Image (tube, rainbow, N blue to C red):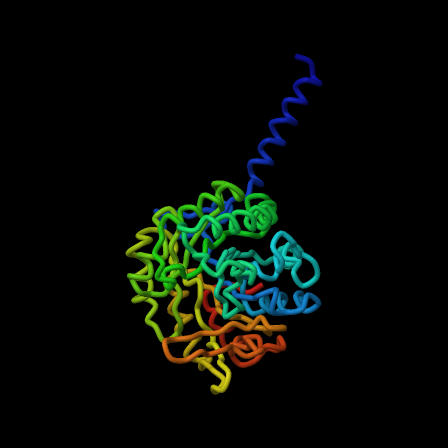
Length: 359
């Protein structure tokens, strides 16, 4: 073997070593109850921010403030009705350019958690479902029992999920995990075949390596209906709830792995005709401090609420009252509807700084 061949072998081995060292991964360490980012224990501190509730020219301003507040991750929903307002006609331009949004977050050093639906709730019109799903009013939604619904979901996800796949963390992007459905236990449909179908669909387009998760409120019967063993079950709760109690419910369905509060409520929903909802900053910070002391990952819902443009405000209802959401989705969040910082922003930043270095 000549000197040139020896050099070539050395160069090949060196490059292979470099590629191995630079391989990106985001996984769950079930033995040590944590996430591993590139093999190193990691805890995300995230904030919900809905690209469809904030004009595109404000995205960078809001994301920059989120990072300044101590966050390392942003959590987003995908609103199906924004992207497919007419069946078979897709919109990913302007304020609906989700790929550009995720790339912007990445350029600012933020990771991304995607809640892909198909149902998102979010106090958004029809929970993010496009209105054309109701062309046949007999359709059964969020269920494996109606092929019409499943076919529509299959078609939509065949467009949406491939846009996410190159942006997964393992592919060099910022997306570390993807939620399947949303608080499905609260739907009371309790169709595990439906959740299994969705998981298979997500795996088909995203691969086997991405973390797929669910979230439900801290009631055991909601978890029993809302998740399946092959998906990572997380919990949501607000500052009024004892974190140890809520995470104990999660642990019944997720015995090992990182604790995760996927929706930690910084404020609450407004309804027409009612007083603006607020949550005391000190109370939110006290609960956050306990969550972080438990080495849990957390997502603030919301970090900025934004605005329900057009007729996209949703509604809540019970057996007696129909309660529409107003245009504002301010949510008494750390960033106001207009994107301004306030007391809650600074109090929560100070709390985070006790547990994590803020860059």
